[in-house]
Length: 487
Image (cartoon, rainbow, N blue to C red):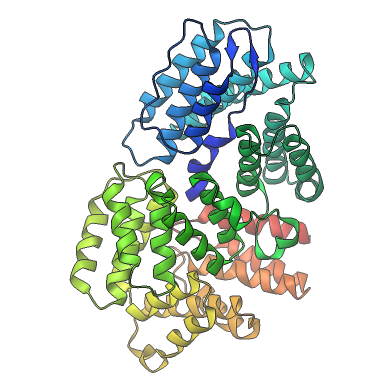
């Protein structure tokens, strides 16, 4: 989820309609608003008016934020933050006695909150969040009939439930919110607008994005999750983006491949370059030779460094499994010299590249099949290596055991998965690889599912005792939560 957390948030911050004094939202502003959602603007359009309009200030800030987070342009964070804060100052000078004033400032403060968090300025981020909440509370108190209040209230409620679950351990209350309250509130908010309006479009999109960020989306929770239809994904690049993320979490990989193919044919990938990356990876996982075209297209169009390391890793795997070692080695050399980014996928790629000396083409192929949901073929590829295992070094044996355990687990064969998880867990290589800690966690999950709580707790404790060079905080948090739920 971290990989995508930075990209998603931008479209949760805006929704205004009608006109009020210095905050005009006519057809012209609505058109600008909608085309920003369509990712049509590289630069903010010229806007000619003799009147001050706070909505335009907000739209300029919104456009700057969208361009920074979703486009492939190379834009400095400090520059974007300065532009958004300039628009905030302009709005603060306008008439404050109307709901649009507080609505626009809620959005802008949320943008600043996120950017400051990404920049490492936690104190300023928290301050911006509380300023956003203050303006939203003012709107709810002074203008309770202002229909647009519901969207921000929905965002704050979802955020609060996530904090309650992950910080204060109130997971059952959070689950109840997502099962019942959230969908009801979302439907009520959508009912205020025509389905063809930009307002309805954005609320619907926001609902799915909030679900991705804060909800519990997995194959096990399918019946509780609101799943977008393929037709929703055809509405625009952001809708396709959200749909792909949800289908991926639900492990509906073949549906995802079709969504990405449709997105490409409709031209969405040209507006949202990360869709080229995801399409290339989906094709690679399904053994399509055309995957190379989309991975290279992403790299060609990506002007900033975000996910470039990750894309090069996937491209190196394409060359490795097609027996082209020279271009694979060249890409690995590039990965080593690329600057570090804050994107989680790039950090993961750096970690993988460090261990490239241990790679085996067959194990990489099994990983790709696994990532595409083809667990049985992933198992077959691994089993074909049985006669060669005696030639493997210790790290290779560790990964072999872990990958086979994962494939058996996902294929619904827990009795075959358990001994391989135990081998990986007991390898004494947790300081260098994440496989031992994750194996302990998954053993806990298997025994929890079979209602053997005491054994599950034992493995969760083991997970907490093991080190991990990457993902450590995440897997320890999961193990701690599951353990506490069983105790």
